[in-house]
Length: 88
Image 1: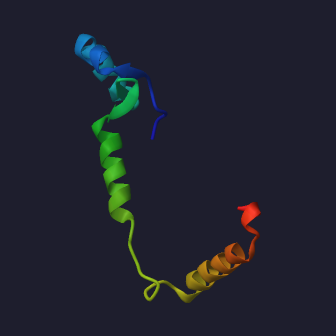
Image 2: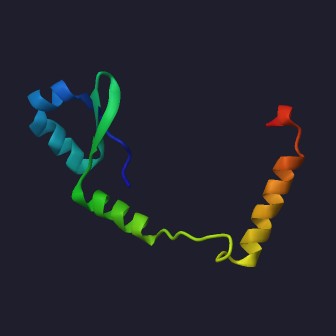
Image 3: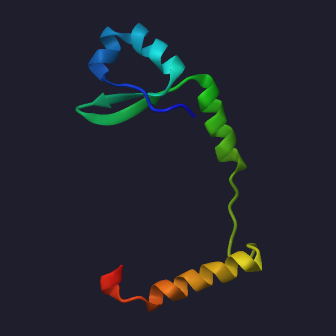
């Protein structure tokens, strides 16, 4: 997806909506409210790409994961449990 574009306040959005929409067609635009990011405007192609990517993800349980992945996970947990708390 293209880089994140400009950042505008909700006040900017009401005053310069045409310019902001034109920019959002090129790359995502962040809308802030009280100096906090609240919304992202992005073109439909980017939105649909994000939705396809999220649909492609899968959920599994420990029982349904391949044994190689489960072994790797268990090794990582064991390694973490064996480290000194000050090193975390």
